[in-house]
Amino acid sequence: MRGHWKETMPGVGSLAKLLNVNHKSVEEALRQLEREGVLKGQGPGRKRAIISKVVRTERATRVTILPYEAKDRFALSIVELQHALSEAGHEVIIAEKSLVALGMNPARISRLVRRTQTDAWIIQAGSREVLEWFAAQPVPAIALFGRRDGIPIAAAGPGTHDACAHATRQLIALGHRRIVMLCRSERRKPDPGLTERTMLDELTAYGIPTSEYNLPDWDESIDGFQDLL
Image (cartoon, rainbow, N blue to C red; front, side, top):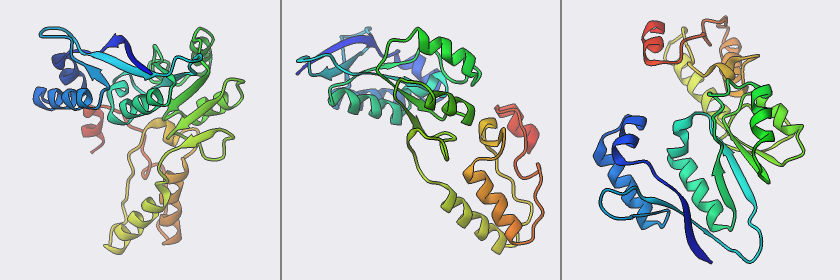
């Protein structure tokens, strides 16, 4: 087993701007990744190298992660996943485009898949249509979060519907009736996901009428959030 690297991590300034956090937080996170052996410093003024530790006795399995947004490649969960897969002897790459950049469009995703040489895919927060498309492909795929319920695809992620049901009941017990859940469009369309349906079912069970008001369409931006409020 030996360490090697092909990519470099963006600088502190670039990451701070991308993630909208302060420079000190980014620098401390990068130092932690150095201590864990994920990154390697290359001297003052030079970007840190991304290290992958793999066993070279045979060809490594290449796993491609398709992130929801481009900035998710730097999310702690994705970085830890990359590190764990590399430690297990796999070669891990991040897809050149994200689901958002591809518009959650299976036709555009299929073109990306055709030109990407990989042994398996991990899809982060995919829509139902996207995950159904991957489930029908010959290359193995794993759904990380996303609209995976009822689709014959390997999947991992938190089960949030029980927590949602409890939270909805608590709000109703406190006297609230106008309860709204903000979620991404792929969680609402073409129909509500399991967690979203759970909230609507709880409202109905307590005699509270439901409509699009409870799962509104909104521009998923800071300005859109303010307008919705």
